[in-house]
Length: 152
Image (cartoon, rainbow, N blue to C red; front, top):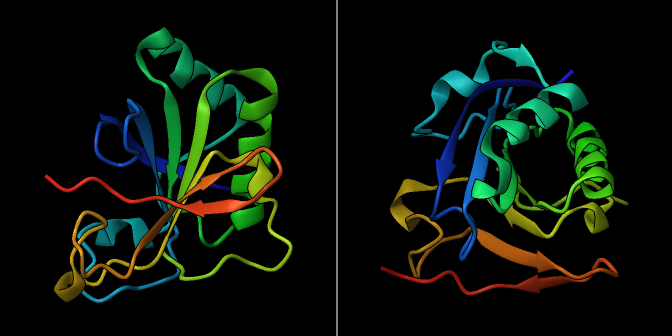
């Protein structure tokens, strides 16, 4: 079961969206220099449909997107919850995976945004021209369109 450790409203994770970012635990990637090392541990509260609905209910129309931050240990559970949100809300759904590629047959059509790639400090974040990370907009038919991330 997915567990969330924390959440926050962020403005830079998904361009042009006010995003509720949910930090998920049990990250299996172990990236060197990880700024959120505690997310590698088994901690937090279970993430269910009811939890998602409650969190979004607290913010009303103040957020336009929910982004799962992590969840690489259970990618198909992330996709299942994304499908739930897509069926029951009008909010956009994103996922940040620290992996460079998605699992085979992954249902990308449940998302509007997917960000891939581990954070490698020397390459910089998504806003850096040297980054290894990629952000995609997902079309209704599941096509992954690369997005340019605005620099500061």
